[in-house]
Image (cartoon, rainbow over all chains, first blue to last red; front, side):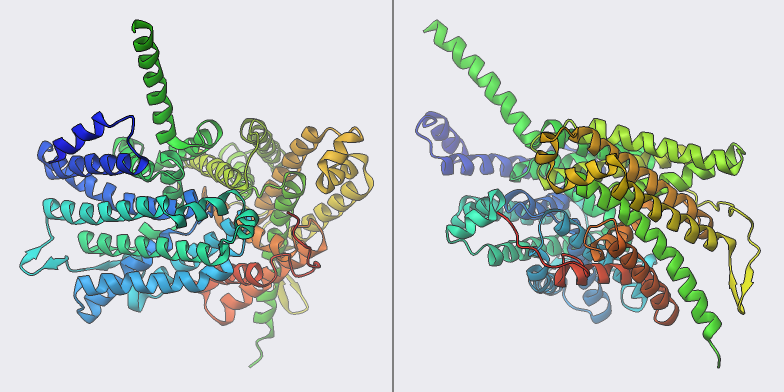
Length: 339
Length: 294
């Protein structure tokens, strides 16, 4: 079936619409995700892939805000943490079902984002950056200091795994497919959103908010809505993180992680969903290689942020596209000379 | 129960922290007015001031004055390098790319500091001992006096430089309208570089005078930088009285809040104030509202 699809895709390349191409790319990506575990030995790599999945969700969520609507958030780890803590507290202290906890976590985060979104997104540029940063730090302090609820700096343990009837997601294989199913859904939703009227309106806001408003885009509401969607996805990722790790502590949700998320989006490519995957993958794998350097990986992040913004503002994905375009044109010109 | 000595201690430490926040805020304002950039790496120069002084004073046993001078010099050189390597080459920079580049720089500087000096928190010896002075029944550390004196000196020097010297006036002209300034023969690029020089020097000085009171480590720059930003936001992005008031107000509220409400939420107080100001009066407490030009 897929073979047929691909063949059709290749044959119809010249007349292929953009939508068709998107579908084919997504199907290839999905196939790759589904079969990857069969080529890996040992649970270590699977475990890394689970983290790449969670980080991809977070990077895609931030990209909707940063890459499409052009609004920065330096506090997105707060929504990730909120999702994890709401889910963790509800399941450990009140015995709620993890699925229900996940839904509540996403809802709480969404409501909070919607409420603070109006005053925060009124701000622009540097001021927005500082306000979201301040919000992130306030949430981090709350995770740390409400010891009676969250367990404080020593963390919250014993969070139950997600369960579907008798299937418990407590090993790397099942977690891999659980996380990646949801990650793929998030990616599909985001691609869909970016190609829709809303996506175009968001890009218009990023280019010039005033111009977008003149054209009849309700910029203020739309920004808050995309902020809310982004927060909901981040909280879902947080909840899934809590249920796969079964242990959470505030250190995972601090300022540094917010910056790491921005780094993922920037090095992958602003406004590219697959770029976010690429960024998330690189920033998840890199520390594994830099383990000998321990915490010095932040030097590498700092350098990457500066160099990418200065020399490759479109991120790695645009670099890949440029290379592909270059090779493509070479092949084409060679083919042309033969004809 | 008479608790006025306690209150006095809170006010004193609030004011001395507030003076530091105001100085850091000055650094933000000077660069912002020259370039329109909020330098997220500002706090790292404060950290560098403290750590470099510690390095020369304790590890290399230099005398105090040379240690301080060297610390300021090196921080300033790093500020110049930052402007030349990361800010100047950038053309058509958006606010977003500026935020990201300065954040990148701040992570880089912090990382290198950690690489060189490790992760430990260090105590820096006070400038003139730790014997408290007794004034009207209250105790005051000599370091507090140093902080107030040096802050006043920097504020005065700042005022004289920007209001009376030809270079200072040229910088203000660039802040007001850089195109017009370049038309009358002012070298805007030099003025931008100079703004980085002044602001990294003031930042490191702030770090040097606060280090003996608060201890120092590679990561103090984040919090100090953010609080300095909070001060300058209250002051409406000016390097004048508004920011001084903003810094002192923030320091006082933080210190009293920590003393009477909850010490563990001390840092949260600053950020709640920051958010409130940004939500309600983003143009600062002391400024008139301006219309946004499109």
